[in-house]
Length: 321
Image (cartoon, rainbow, N blue to C red; front, side, top):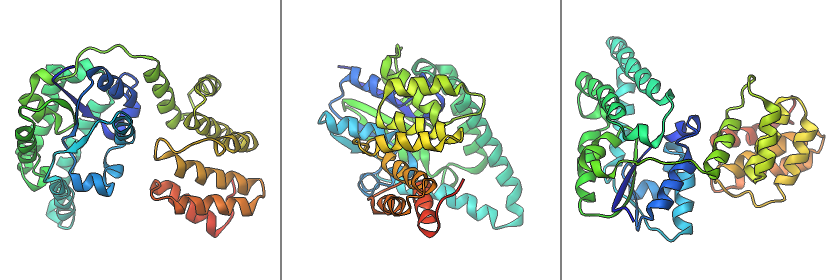
């Protein structure tokens, strides 16, 4: 067992990286066999109240993995609420005419960060001094321009406290990308090592690609891969491909199959499945069943906002292409 392993979370951007997707993170953790999973960028309160769902989609995979193995999850950022200061800072700038140049400067830093996230990323690349140096350069320029305080969500202070809490500990640490360089400096021996992708990562990469369905993709090959996986998420995505191609009857047949399975995981899936199922039932003229599906979305303890919006619209009037 490795004493400590430090992994950055790319949040919603994991789906862009077949060599560092959610399954990659799980595979690295599986190999490390950590006694504890530490979340450097979340608070216990935020974890308990589910605020992570809007902040970090990686946790849809991490938390069930830890629970299934009896690994305790400890959220370390006692001042995570200060992250909201960064958004409040931007909103305040937007209220004043003189704030526009500052917002434009912030947008330039955002673009520099996005450019980094669009490059092919692997565990080895994320641990490299080249990547960390560029990430520190982007963040450092932002902090120098706007101050290390409300504009950054007091990131440096928060991560110094997290690093102090981690000293002498064993386990796996997952940190937001911009928090990661601070902890990488404190624990350089914990950086990700070389990793060879396995079948689970290749399957996750295919699912991630299907979530981003594009016109230039080979839809036939995508469907072949999704059917080979055969999970509820894969079949839901196959139905999405058929619907995008205008073949809604085939999509409905697949969704009928999905709703007869246990489609509870990942946690975002039930809302999407029921919302789309309702729409397809509307297209088939089965209004009563469609209404039950829409109500099912709203009855869930949590569903993505997009799914809830689809359900609310479907309750008001039948869906039409």
